[in-house]
Image 1 (cartoon, rainbow, N blue to C red):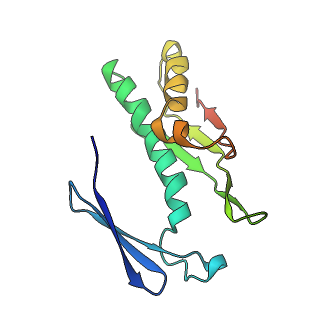
Image 2 (cartoon, one colour):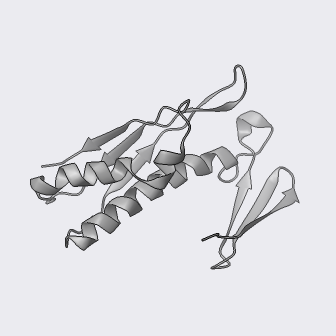
Image 3 (spheres, rainbow, N blue to C red):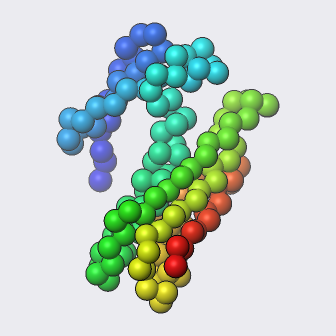
Length: 137
């Protein structure tokens, strides 16, 4: 199944992306350290955003099947860029802070689900994306 996303250059190093199925849109701006204003997500900011949202969504799908509520779970992703030999994302360390009350017998399954999210699996071998879990209880 394909999803159509249309991206239009708006000028001033800004783009508008429209999600075909829903019509929802978002703006991107070049980052301040690369000739932009940094007024919105940069295109490379969408990669860690996608990674975090995908991890939570994949885990929630598995959890809901088992009657587990992940409300309040949080993902923090840091984007580390390198410039040499070319500008690219080099590292995306992920910290998952889980809500209290998740039964211990489901934690391994949730951790496996996080590592199977499609975005994490789509990252190339040259992008380091370790996932750390914080269980509050």
